[in-house]
Length: 80
Image 1: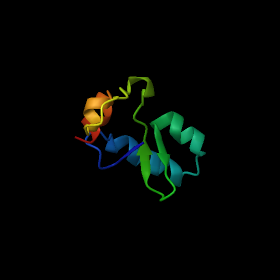
Image 2: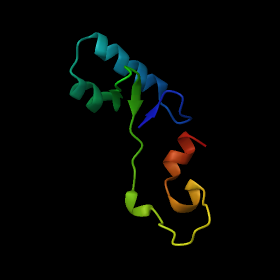
Image 3: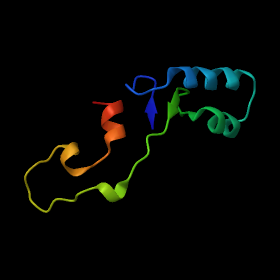
């Protein structure tokens, strides 16, 4: 999940989710319409798809950056 500070956040969609929440729409309706979900801290978030099958579990003991072991361009674009 990513929040409004992500580089790829669609602020207009998160604002629409906030507005629909004020209209007493259900969380399922809001999610389907805007892609936004409210987190436990009451802040709006959107999903970044994860592909756990793209994790390269290295067998060596040297430290690696996340980018070296996990291929997820959408995540790195949102949070460089």
